[in-house]
Length: 281
Ligand SMILES: [Zn+2]
Image 1 (cartoon, rainbow, N blue to C red):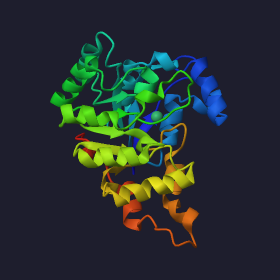
Image 2 (spheres, helix red, strand yellow; image 1 turned 180 degrees about the vertical axis):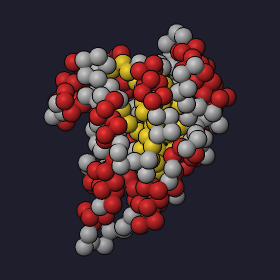
Image 3 (cartoon, rainbow, N blue to C red; image 1 turned 60 degrees about the horizontal axis):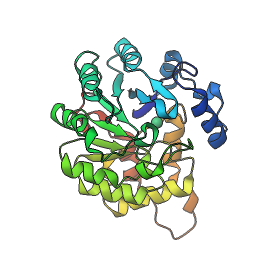
Image 4 (cartoon, helix red, strand yellow; image 1 turned 90 degrees about the vertical axis):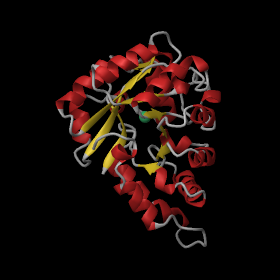
């Protein structure tokens, strides 16, 4: 099992009080639950073979995880950790910073979150970053889904916005985090159109009805083979995510509702996201 969506960040140093307060209101999350030291990350990933570890440059949302911090951690165990850089694509110098991360820090992917970074993913000022990623086969994991901080503009969250990006950059590999929740159907039809678009299932099993519908929607649109396993640690562990996935049909047990086929569930658990995204692993 490979986890394609994990965070490494220290409360206080990288995650600020505004984000923590929003997480507390939305989830009852404590600072201790959000804080991920290198030791805690390693311990939490004991049950997976490898994990993508995300940087996050989102000062707008009070979270800044420096690219060098992620790179240092991943360099300790490069066979298990795959580091993703983060830049704000519309900020001056974004492409240059991405180039530094790619060339000098060996970070092999890019993490974006338009709602957290306060930019429109279709803004042409961000295109040089997409162009660099497309040219160097750098996959993007993008939080194109709803979120909880009050200042995050949900109009930038819609999965359908990435249709425009994928039309312009057809070879750009993108993973839509959290299956675009609560716009899972919009996510499914967007990744169906574009061969290089995928989605991860992280963070969904805590809402069993939505999760069930999301997977059935993906089966009906024929995109279940484009779903990748991820936990969004520390919000969930890989074990809890796998367990939630195995139990996805529980909510419709004893009803005539369709079941998510076992082959789809096993496929998500067994598919290695790294080669799918063009990364070694
Ligand atoms: Zn996340």
